[in-house]
Image (cartoon, rainbow, N blue to C red; front, side, top):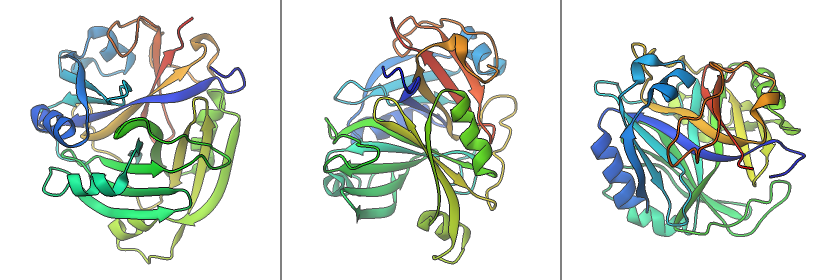
Length: 295
């Protein structure tokens, strides 16, 4: 773990789905994942997340062939699917893949909707898909590391989560969250967001304020300022559908600059490895789960 950047790497995205079995099958059958752990949301997790009504909800953690537990699915019956690119909070999970074109072929006729087919950008080739609960995935093939982030190529057909993407109303407010957690390198720029403009019926050339945050472990966070996005539905005391949380490794939970939802706990389970865990909220209300690094 880098002593210069206490936050990172990104570890796991959490998605709420109305049909857990359908979502698990979709990821296992088409995105090369296997079940790491199956169970229920524990009292400790519900307390950490500030969602006591979630206790007992079924949960499945999935891992890649390379052993990265990059996705956790929580089943909540009756939630409406997320609206891709239209809601504040976690907007997408960008995941490293070995061959974007081969994966595009594999996903034909699958439960995943291909929102944008494989497209080249520098040393990367990527596509965007929408999953069964309305969650957006950026599936990105990195051919070779490129400055300044130097993301390494995938080590499995679908490898690991390296860039969660969030939508907020104020870019600088969102960036400050990660600065308080120890991220020291950020970038600000304006750029077109084709999928966002398409989803909202905006001019394709419209630019949006964007920020990126460098994390440890060759990971990053992308922040999109979207004045057109709407708040997520409340979820009746639980959580709405779609991407609701991202888990990060952090060097030390005693020195974070944000107030956690509850004091750190050690929930147990394969994902946490016996470590202490805390959770806090980002600028748009999205959940960030912080898992203290081992040893």
